[in-house]
Amino acid sequence: MIDPYINIRSEMVEKQIVGRGITDARVIEAMKKVPRHLFLNPAMHHNAYSDNALPIEENQTISQPYIVALMTQSLQLTGKEKVLEIGAGSGYQAAILAELCRRVFTIERIPALAKKARERLESLGYTNVAVLTGDGTLGRVEFAPYDRIIITAAAPDIPGGLLKQLSDNGCLVAPVGGRDFQTLRIIQKEGGELSEHDLIGCAFVPLIGKNGWKN
Ligand code: SAM
Image 1 (cartoon, protein in one colour):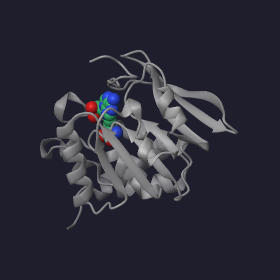
Image 2: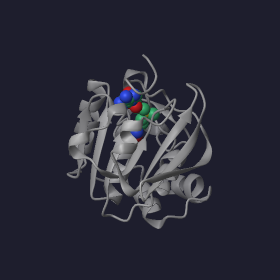
Image 3: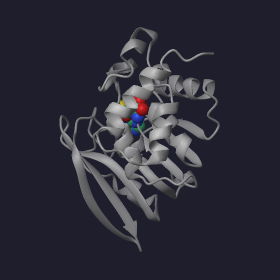
Image 4: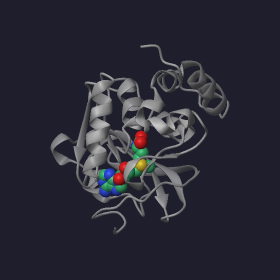
């Protein structure tokens, strides 16, 4: 089927992604390829390539394209990695990751969202993504260790259990801070030692769970 949004998406990537300093060619290609509108309700399709986070079902959001690109770039994916995402939401970020690594596990706490994300990813032909339902603040030990971990909901702090499930030489990216405003933080694990640095300010919906915010 012809994609009516192909040109608008390409323009969005040039303006919002390349224009704001994203340089990883693989990330740029993935952002051009994945049809963000298909991760939204049809009534929202016309807005899909605006420079915004947008509402999805269950009072949650799909992240702003620039933030998706920035977080993905920070993971420095080469194609070989096993990646854990916390907060599947619409499934869009998982699709971008699936384009760039070997295997994606994405956890969503709201079963209805997990079901929809799974259906979308399957209908787009992604066979290297597993959408799991549950509390992502606990990670999923049975598939650990992960080469990369990405948390796409606002964490009061990085859950310690997730750091244990991160491979040596791996990295984790997450919005960390208050319920309303956070900083994108990157944690690197090398020789068992952790180091961190911050990227930019951001605003995500809260990470709710045993090692996150209370509901
Ligand atoms: N990555 C998503 C996308 O591409 O559409 C956007 C994620 S949205 C900003 C945050 C998601 O995290 C919501 O769907 C929310 O239900 C989910 N969430 C919050 N706490 C969670 C937890 N403890 N475990 C798993 N998912 C969680």
